[in-house]
Image (cartoon, rainbow over all chains, first blue to last red):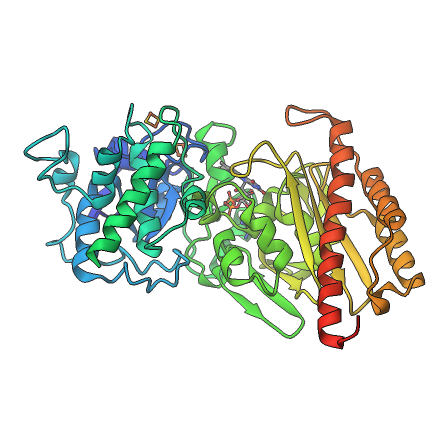
Amino acid sequence: MRVHFTVNGRPQEADDVWEGESLLYVLRERMGLPGSKNACEQGECGSCTVRLDGVPVCACLVAAGQAEGRDVVTVEGLADFAKQRAEHGSCATGASGGSGVSGACGSGQGTSGTSGTSLQDAQHWRAEGTDSQTGEGTGLAPIQQAFIDAGAVQCGFCTPGLLVAADELLERNDSPSDADIREALSGNLCRCTGYETILDAVRLAAARQGEVV
Amino acid sequence: MDFLRPATWEEALAVKAEHPTAVPIAGGTDVMVEINFDHRRPEYLVDLNRISELQDWHVGEKTVQLGASVPYSRIMEELRAELPGLALASHTVASPQIRNRGGVGGNLGTASPAGDAHPALLAADCEVEVESQARGSRLIPIDAFFTGVKRNALEADELIKSVHIKKAEGPQQFSKVGTRNAMVIAVCAFGIALHPETRTVRTGIGSAAPTPIRAKAAEEFLNAALEEGGFWDNGKIITPSIAKRFAELCSGAANPIDDVRGTASYRRHAVGVMARRTLGWTWESYRGKSRGTEGVA
Ligand SMILES: Cc1cc2nc3c(=O)[nH]c(=O)nc-3n(C[C@H](O)[C@H](O)[C@H](O)COP(=O)(O)OP(=O)(O)OC[C@H]3O[C@@H](n4cnc5c(N)ncnc54)[C@H](O)[C@@H]3O)c2cc1C
Ligand code: FES
Ligand code: FES
């Protein structure tokens, strides 16, 4: 079957999709977006976390056909997504009532085709910058920069899912408590870091977000 | 495989009438795991995500009519006052990502003895509204819904539309034993609801029998003991001997098995502990409230 949905603000379609295929498979294997990771395919690890109509979900548990006509944000589009949010301020204001389920954020944003991240850009997305070690001068989302600065990345396999989940937390809660952070990230497993530096990164991003406002 | 996307409830019922073996998919958090691991290859998948009424709820005078696909995250956040037991249970399900997709309709569809909604639904008391194109809708009392291990009272051509849950008129609690707080299937779980209007207490036990069950003998004992001692009126602390007997009877209602998550004897023990504790918590809260409103100590 053919499936159409918006990925990182641009309309996309995938052909020859098997009816039992997951959104994760379509993103990775048919659209060439391997940022969302496939580790468990059973919802346990969160490394495939994407936003579906604004809501963080495991892409491995969404049937591709269920994404028809809907809006998906992947880690490849996160930097643009965060930039647009900062410019338009629509999501950061908490208009979604904190439920994170309203779909107010992300939906329809880039359907004009001029904003968002094109598939090609997304496929080749990397942090271009003056210094690839520190991320300086790159177009990273604040949460991505904070992960680098806090040393929250080791093997990096869990990182994309954590970034998407952490970014959504900071969107609806600009000063999360440690308990809020732990809860928001409780569906994301990391086998390397022991989580402390990940918590540091989210605290850092929250603090920086507070400085800007 | 065919992927069917009915836009309305009527269309979904028509699909189910035509293809009784079609597998509905709501949040997909059970169905997709089975498909990903090749445990299930249904001929038809019926996506329920487009049917907006399944995502809605209505708060009535006595009951909440909860659409089958309302995700756990919304129950937790928006129905805490009306359905405190179910809201607590929802909060213990898996992770935010799973709670954003999964809901009570899927939990009832799977009908696992470990489903976390079930003890809360049994304790609160509810009816499951199911419908077929041929016979229209019917209400299945929750006590008659679970018919065996991962089996329920649904007919092949029926879909779950909503659950009519009694609004809480008294304190409710939910307790679950697992190896950590997040992402854990219950070793066993316990739900309790005080119903001051009818002066009854209802319970629900998860993961400790082939189906979710109520501890009926424990309820009967407790209801009689509370009545006899005038506890509902005098708001006294429940005596340790009553609490102990209640816990023993709850434990006795369990009919668990040994498995990777725990042994039968551990489960029986844990059910008793959870029963005693949750009774204590809810009763304290009831006493607090009745003292507050009646102004007597
Ligand atoms: C990582 C992980 C952790 C989990 N942890 C928990 C946990 O802690 N506690 C817990 O209780 N569960 C847990 N689950 C199981 C699952 O999330 C729940 O059972 C959830 O309630 C299923 O809801 P769903 O909408 O995703 O169901 P789906 O997967 O869409 O459907 C489940 C079943 O119900 C049927 N169905 C769905 N909707 C209807 C309807 N309207 N009418 C008729 N049949 C219907 C489907 O055909 C299927 O058989 C977990 C799952 C995963 C992947
Ligand atoms: S791959 Fe989806 S949760 Fe692990
Ligand atoms: S950095 Fe390796 S799994 Fe998290």
